[in-house]
Image (cartoon, rainbow, N blue to C red):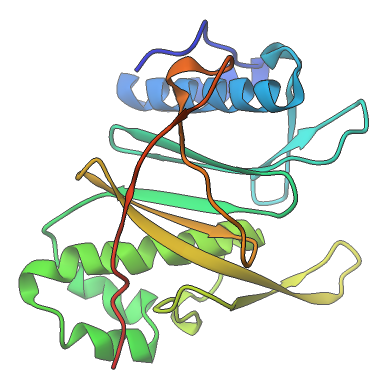
Length: 231
């Protein structure tokens, strides 16, 4: 998929792009960052080249609006053959995507799954274990990306079998502990990728294709993935 008009990277992003070893990864980075600029430019009705990012202590980019508009929250995920972006005007968001896989990932269960999640896996057929794990993995990564903690947190303490009411404790800028709550949704995209989004409780998600951005958004239909639950 080509960009709506042209590649739009800052000087520091071009430097970061060159740190990727393969041409394919460089193109993913180039596409994702350019598309993110087009989306923010489209929402704020500004030239994409005027979109400026700063970076948090864990490297997460944030949009700087020198005109004092309401902040735009966003998150980006790059995986094989897919760039996915979540954007919100009123709450932090997180997104993660992975290509569907037949690999079981059994060696990662103890490091990433809660006790309840590990019990639920005992009832999942071997052929489905790989994608069931990726569902939980993407949900945890999206949740922690939305909270701003990233994967430095202990993944086993988060149980993401349900869709609503996930609490993440963070340290605010003032140093105080603060609870943030998120809902989770997971989808199968085009039969090839699993995508999870962490968002404000009760928010309605709208899916768009970047084909015609920044001029118009095209709605894209996605089929929800049934969440595996422990009975």
